[in-house]
Length: 190
Image 1 (cartoon, rainbow, N blue to C red):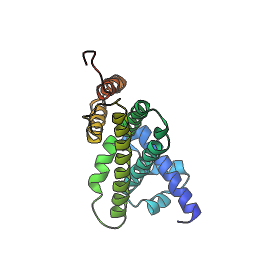
Image 2: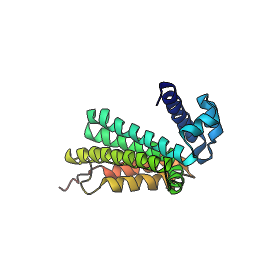
Image 3: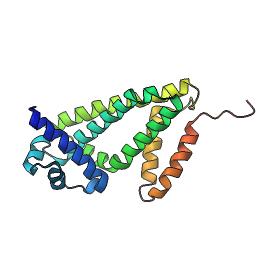
Image 4: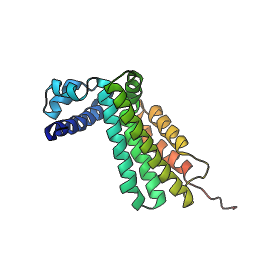
């Protein structure tokens, strides 16, 4: 990709993130192109469908989560790293929870769609592995329940995001309860 095309691609992804953060599933492609300072044709050259854009955006965001885990969380105490990871995936989930399901359901086909799915799948796998490392490190340090898995954590986050979609004021309280439940509690009797 030429340098100017790469800049447009990256600017489109950054503006798509802003638009989906503000408007959720209703973000308009025309608005994304305008924010990026390009024409709608440029957007479609990079992302032939809304679903391809969403898959690329999700892959980009998941790669960011993976980098965050690898570059920052590895430097933190295990309990702090786990809490920060949970907060990061919750923030991701609040923006992309509904958007991701619809996009992935539409991405069955050929060409660009297959490429977008492969990139999304690779980014998802890497992000899950990073989350697993953060959780296992907390478990090894004795600060997280040993019987919880990364899949459990993911299900809890998805459930929390879905449960508070229409009542966002409950999110922080329920997140605190979830984190308390994940942290290892040693009873005074033991």
